Structure formats: structure tokens, C-alpha cells
View 1 (tube, rainbow, N blue to C red):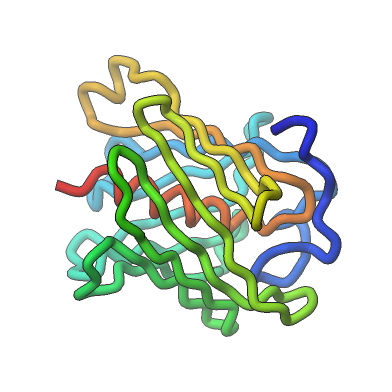
View 2 (view 1 turned 180 degrees about the horizontal axis):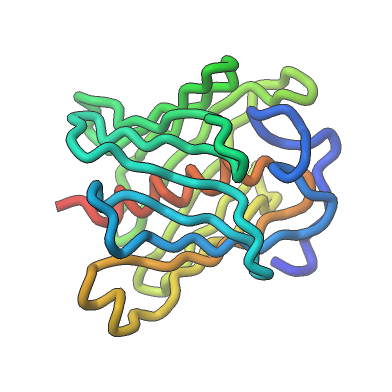
Length: 196
């Protein structure tokens, strides 16, 4: 993906283009499930240099598996919830500011496929991203048409992850892409892959 890291113009995402949610250079996010979380669905989202970007807090008891995404200062960006009564696990991101998006699951044998739909904040264009994951190879890609947007890899299992059933993801994101959206897509992929 390194050769395809040209920035998106206009910026790509449902949130307004502001830092630190958008960066003019490639960013690799480190997403770790918190080991001692009461809900079991909390994530810490940082850059590779350790700067905290997002906090993801799952609800302890929730039929819709709601997760609240907040920026590093604690401002709520959106709530991600499981869409009920769908054949393939799907999600809706609802923002208090109206920057909503949907992640729709699709049938796929031995891999995970989803589409992500939103209105691009920068130009108002309707956008559909495609996610395809292959957990046998521990990776997934997010694309707009044929153009890469992000690459997700899952760290090989270590003792902590094996014992606590928690995951660590590394997500390389193209410049000028909404990092909170990409983190949400990664959480959706984790939820789909860990379905019983």
C-alpha cells in the first residue's frame, strides 16, 4: 500500500476535516482492546508514537452493542450501534452533530466483506467504501473503488491476547482520511469476526 498513499483531495470522511482526526501524512493507528474492561468492548486508539487519538467505550449491558467514540479531549464524536434484524451483522454510526455513517455486512465465505456509506463532509458527495478482510492472513483492506484508503493488520496472538481474548490492530491510513471512521470500521470488523 505504501506506493498508493497519495492524499485524498477533498478530504474523505463524514466528520469535518480538522486535526487530529485528519492528517496530511500517512498515519498508522494502534488499536488495542482493553484487557480489564467491564464491557469487554473498550478500545484505546493511539498513533505509533503513543499519542492518544480516540477513546472507545462499550456499554456493559446493551442489546445493540453500543460503543461511544470520543476524541482525546473527551468530546463525543459518534455512537456505533449494531443494527438489529439484519442477516449479516451491520452497524450505524450516529453523531450528535449529524455526521452519520453505516457499515453493512455482506455474505462472504472465509473472509469478511462490508460496505461503508456516508455523505462526504468536505464536498457533500455520497461515498461508498469497500472492506474486505481475510483473518487467515490477519489483514483487511478498505478501498474507494480501486484506490486504497486503509490497510488493517492484526498482531500475532501473544499470551495476553490468548488468555484474555483481546486483539491488537495496526491500521495504516492514507493522508486526509477521517481517522475516527477508519477506527470505527476496524471495530466493526472485530465485532463481525468475533461473532459466535
